[in-house]
Length: 587
Ligand code: HEM
Ligand code: SF4
Image 1 (cartoon, rainbow, N blue to C red):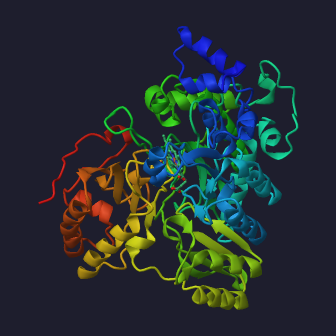
Image 2 (image 1 turned 180 degrees about the vertical axis):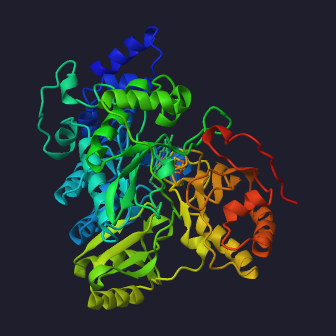
Image 3 (image 1 turned 120 degrees about the horizontal axis):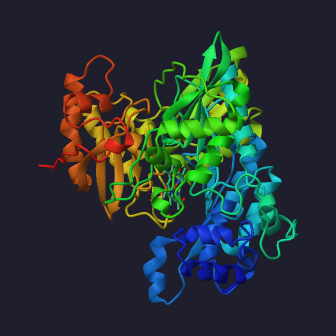
């Protein structure tokens, strides 16, 4: 599909212009329109053009194909089994029961009958075919939600400490997440035009004007940008993994302001040591009313300073590594016209969720329900999707996706609590989890839908955890909270480099094993063993868990123990991630 937009890219590309291919695609896209509308109408293929595949990400969707079917379809000379993954934008992960019911209906009508809670506090649909895409987007819009900026080189879904009912600061965190999301949203009319009513909202002939995107301009950001709001002692949003974060500082029961964090990120490329995960730094402290403006200025410095030649080094974490935190802070302060205050003390305790029932103010109850790898699906004897649908039909409070892929049913009365328990029991759903390891486990989607997966993740982690549970039971650690996370490739969607046990796919059935991250999310792990299969993973972890049970100090966490015991060197910052690696081999 050749268009004016694409040919202008080819011409620009021939010059001395070193900018990455995606920069040209964005520039020529007429503010994210590209030829998406034509591509959706083309019936000969289930796919979109290569350039449009990049652009639809900004609209919250990825083109994928079912990798389980690739071989069979190739033999029959059929094109790949294309479909779309659609990701909703839900700042703070909070939806009403009516919205839950709408999303559940969409999963059945247009997707593969499952809802996937993600590590960014939102829902994904898988398996939406092209001819259903507009109807899916419209149904999402009818439920007063959208998918704009859920993927792409923009500010993504903003996370907030999981339950706004826990304290006034939690409610402020959600409010800030919503304001950040709204303020940093692209302004292009393309979304409305392509997915909703088909009408052109602005004149898009020729070059589009900068005016349409006051914050992002024609090139948007060099790469994705992720923002979160945390309320200590819970670090359930994994703040140190994010480009931008706000930590609530509470004084006398009231929000005094926020510590601002910058420059965290997970992704790296195997074999390229100048790419690495990085934990964020604290930039300083700000007052509540300054937060949105500060977020805007940080985003614009990254817009102007970020690397636009090499996408593998384009995240804010590399801008800060390359320019230094002081220079970055000085530029942000210059744009603000005032200085940030020095950071204030804070303490995080854990990254996990409060699972089970907790009693809040005014005799209201909250249920944190573990959802294995975020997949909401009906299985024989375990009909979770039905259970949550039935709960949504009677529930009056909120339903919240957590950044750990779990769900919170918030603001429940005592009679409501009993009815929810009845529904869960009738559908075979236990509130208790089988172990502390499982309740702290997360896996990214990986196969069969993710085109980047090198190994299984969501479909495999549960059975590996079962094997590890046997070891834990033998040494009396069944109830011990240990964070384990797996991804199918080094991009790190389930934040494996901040897990006490991290597994990152290398190839079919093989993983790199990382150890030594902090339980509170503040310290990265380090590579412990390379290219290991399940047998080796168990052989390597068993003696460590046996030693941990025998030698741990009072309250000591597995990640900290691995460092104290000399199993792994501590990683204090991203630059050290690839240093002092001593690879272990299984006997
Ligand atoms: C180069 C870097 C990355 C690329 C190209 C990438 C791409 C993708 C793709 C294609 C999917 C869809 C998989 C599917 O649903 O079938 C996905 C899922 C997801 N990614 Fe990434 N990703 C990257 C890094 C990250 C990082 C660092 C994070 C967060 C720290 C992240 C967060 C997510 C989340 C929340 C999902 C939804 C599924 C889940 O919860 O596992 N991604 N990513
Ligand atoms: S970590 Fe890799 S395999 Fe897993 S969803 Fe992200 S991109 Fe896909």
